[in-house]
Length: 352
Image 1 (spheres, rainbow, N blue to C red):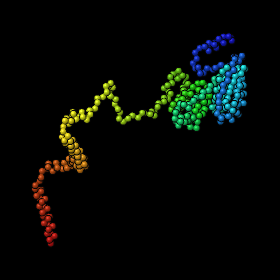
Image 2: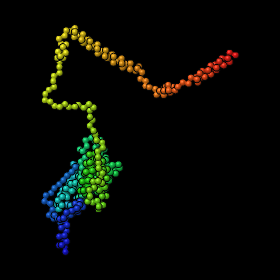
Image 3: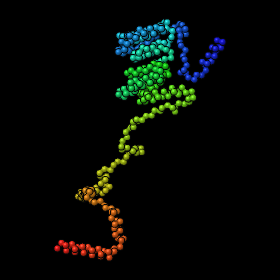
Image 4: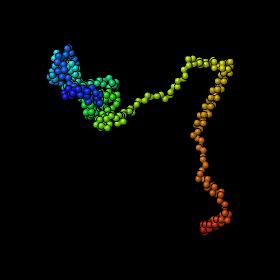
């Protein structure tokens, strides 16, 4: 039965895997390499002065942790360096690389509790250099602050969604966690420095997490659910008001402009006498002056010219009514007589 189970497990392992990230890596034990390593190797890294006090306090814990893998750790305060070395008893050949990553993280202000996670087989570390991604210093500081967010909210969201510990320090971003999460953190940091806000990636990761829970949507394309980023503030190049239209290229040079003598020869002035030439110029000047004076007078008198009156619409119908009606002569006579009698009575009263 046991041999049959082993063969069945081997068949399962050889078959295709749906999700490679979900595979559990087999742990490398001491029994896998009982003879140890052939050559001794070491890695060293420098640390800043302000980390000296913390490293002094945490160094006994570092030595204790590395002694479990038969590694040596040295702290040189004078030179400001940390060194990790393999010994003849070291049985894991890759653990020295993991230890190198651990001391690098501790030099970048990552606390000891987070840095020792790198020693696990399914954990990794990534130190992303962001100093050279943006030239302008103010712009660099603003974009780096976007990774942290208000009160560290954005950084906390990134850590929860990627299962990584992320520390923004100076010109680098240090991350510790599973390899899939490190890929996501690296992409978020790079895009943030390229002026793509990290909230787009946070939303994308949240949506993907919810979609992965639904068994119906597992094998479908998720692009229609994910947010799409589009640049809104595109800096348009300023174009000149007067655009120079390029003429078609010709290998021949442009024709030479006519000189003063050539113009006089063409017009016939060259063969005229000096007195005639002067009188012609005088007449041309006078003619130009007359034209300019006439234009100036027209412009000056334009404000005194009354505007053209249009036909009055209110007077038209009255004129039409008076012309169309026929005059009653008898009524007019009676009216005149009545007015005359009234005038006579008024005169008598005034005289008396």
